[in-house]
Amino acid sequence: MGRVVDLWASDIIEALRRSGSVVRPAEGLDVERWRRAARQAGKELGWSVRTGVSADGSTVWVVSPDYVPTAAERS
Image 1 (cartoon, rainbow, N blue to C red):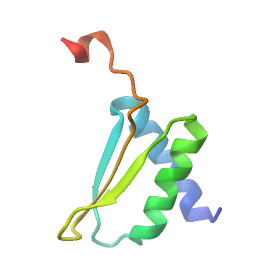
Image 2 (image 1 turned 120 degrees about the horizontal axis):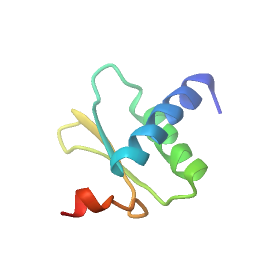
Image 3 (image 1 turned 120 degrees about the vertical axis):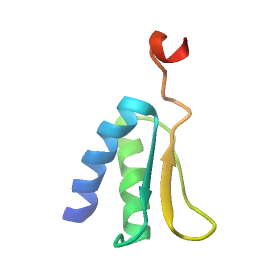
């Protein structure tokens, strides 16, 4: 993968580990490249992920059903 995708994937991995999802403003992003990085992050974690773009194109997101919340988050 390209350097930018690899860098974004590293950031996305950390965010997915913390909360199971990431939402970012799309402004200034190459949206398809960001989504590719999000899919790469899921692959590196061994998690399935879904990526998307808001209807108005202003936001990108990734979410994983494989994220397991901590006990504190479940309370």
